[in-house]
Image 1 (cartoon, rainbow over the protein chains, first blue to last red):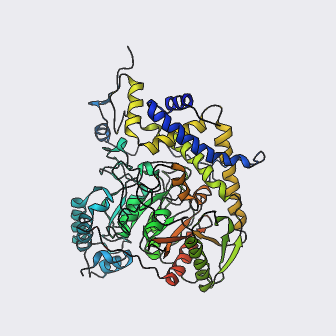
Image 2 (cartoon, helix red, strand yellow):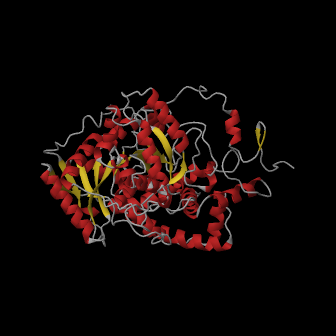
Length: 95
Length: 485
């Protein structure tokens, strides 16, 4: 199996990471060598094996929906790259 | 007392409790040494001024019943610390100041410890050499131009170089044990569910665990006792009866059965690693325990499995970095363009590579062939351990297939870098505890580690085995202070 530039472009789109031509070629090389290494798993027959989805064999617990953090709005907004007092600002979405 | 920074955590705690030392004495000593150690690049952010204030405040009204009374401690920069910048070694978080504290660090401060600063690590803990950090590589105190291992490379360097008496790292595929082995210190990866993941910048959620990195086994046990708590804020935290690891620590391991898995004898492994392992088996016998040959037949499939599962989880966890609510933002023509440029400029090459692998194996048409397949093989790997533990109490292996390598030696070949974690990754996939202890030196004088793997929740047992072996090994780290200015 080989990952071509078209596939790299597709994955970069899905990953929301822009990639120029030069990087795309390097990524294709890297991913091909990594997947070559991963293909080893095909040596194993696993039709009857149940997948391990969680290491802790417990059912996830619910917790009550209560607010514990208070008055941190300002601090949270302060971490944003761009804000307008009480709002996060993003590039225009609706024309 | 001039040699404060040479003392172990246990000694420092005792000296503070006996009032032979104050928290201010100890904190000052570690700050001074850290300031002279900038060449190691172990810190990303220091909090020295505030640490000294806290130490003085502690000394005014010292609570000596605490487990870490007034002990200064630097921690890996993957733990969120309230009001102190937390970067995860990434440009995308280079200005992020958490509004909350991770449970593990909160446990540590609640026992009286004082934050010295945040330690360098591979970006989002993705790496085995600390070379993927946005804040530069870290030097290994053992030798200039040698990597300290990764991803907890700054943590390992800081403990081995005596910049902090002890620290915590995180381990997703070997990130505590491999750097511990490369720098001649002790590192414990606890059972999955033992230490809370709340407030730790997530990499691969089904594998990530926090754990102590220390100069010796006793110190390691003491910190494990502090950080291992049940936490409702982490939905995979497990409520089990936790031991008083340091109090119950014993060198009596007579009659324990120790498994020696033949599959860990890999092709091309240097003779000195095999020799170290044989020496380890002899130490086990000298301690009155019994080595038993076992088989873990799916060992060689662990790394390929890991490189599907971990990137898949990472691609999902790292989707949150979009340049909107916190962190780095690039300029874009529109929202999508802003996302794509932010992530392209904000993430380093290794992180991008892993996000792409993860996205690919989870994408439509490939999920069954890769992700589901990997989950099935993961089950087989866990079954191997379950079967082995019917016959043995613990397993002894080398920690790494080589000693520390040179900076830049493996950066161009991701697969050769990944192979570093060949002995540590199976433990994460099976959710088991594993400890690396320094056990000897190679011909170049670089430290080598042995790994003891335990049953789930059996940290006490592997700590005991490590404690007994530590005495027989009598390892001395060769630190020359070459970097001190």
